[in-house]
Amino acid sequence: MSDQGGSGAPRRIAHLDMDAFFASVELLEHPELKGFPVVVGGRRPVAAVAGQPYPRLKDYAGRGVATTATYEARAFGVHSGMGLMKAAALVPEAILLPAHFEAYARVSRAFKAAVAEVAPLVEDRGIDEIYIDLTEIPGGSLDLARQLKGAVRAATGLSCSVGITPNKLLSKMASELEKPDGITILSLDDIPTRIWPLPCRAVNGIGPKATAKLESFHIRTIGELAKADTAWLLEHFGQSYGAWLHEAAHGRDDRPLTLSREPKSISRETTFERDLHVKSDREALSLILLDLCERLAQDLARKGYLAQCMGIKLRFEDFTTITRDQTLSLPIADAASLREAARTCLKRVTFNQKLRLLGIRAGSLEKPVEYQNPRAPQKAKMEPNLFELQGTLKYNQTEIQ
Image 1 (spheres, rainbow, N blue to C red):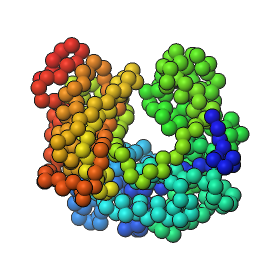
Image 2: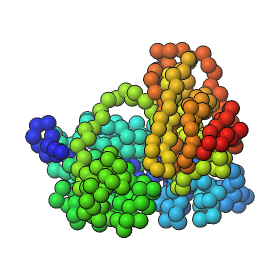
Image 3: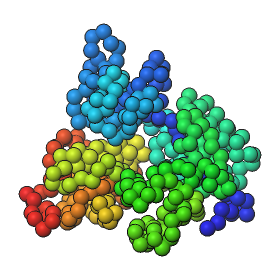
Image 4: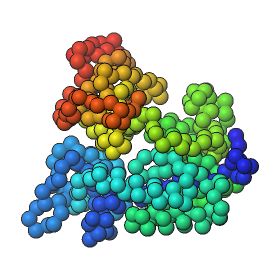
């Protein structure tokens, strides 16, 4: 694998990650809340109790999830995707604010435009993170990192963390090392001292299941993973994933930046904290699917696309991953239509294992000006049995109605 740029210069890739982005945007509107544990989430505002200007997490009742949290709330163990009722048990006095996705989209566009003025080769990785190719940009890495951070702060008033390394894999990890408001610059020579002592889960792509399996073999750090025999990794983790683990542990990654401004698809997925059974955990799976569809609908609305194709992604407890896709008769963008299309795809799956990941994807994207969709948007309803498919569903050779 090469770490050289197109002109022969060493590759210099930056990963820029906004610090607690959604919460930070909310604090722009509520600067008096800085320094307090704040959780952003839920689908509607919660009324404040008399005598306190903001609602508290302990007063929330429902099935909403945390979109994000300030670092003060994260110190109590709150994280994005956590149920708000569970978060309330950890920090009941935290302030709860509803999410404002239009504001997040506006600030996201502002920080990305500011970065493009410094370095135009940018890969958009979502609303709050990007990769930047600095290989051909004049200046030292530290000066460029400071320029990027300064441009973001001037455009948004927010802080970000920047990691600069020879590739995307290392830059993603580097940007996490000095959060918040940090700068980390690493070369390949720094891998033994800065990367190998980190836990394996610090590698983007090593999730809870793989982490647990590695720990069962007494492999806890990236350095220990780097020492593992390649043939052994292939035997225990499969040809593809085992080979990737070996490369990742040594900091090797030759993926180029994806610079296309027009996405071919938009997806959302989540890896569960524990493997879920399609029957006994049906309500939890239903809520997860509903949340994914609502988030994907927000993504489509924010970027101005309709989807002509809908797909699902499932990863089972043995890491087997399957996808199912459906071409739609009419382009869609609302959560209710996305949900129904996802359910149609789920009918084509035989479930013989528990699930560890669920994802959905909107493909064959079109602008509304290219196709006038006659279907009126529908509001997604809370359906406890959303994951329960119409008809029958096979699980371990039994039929579930």
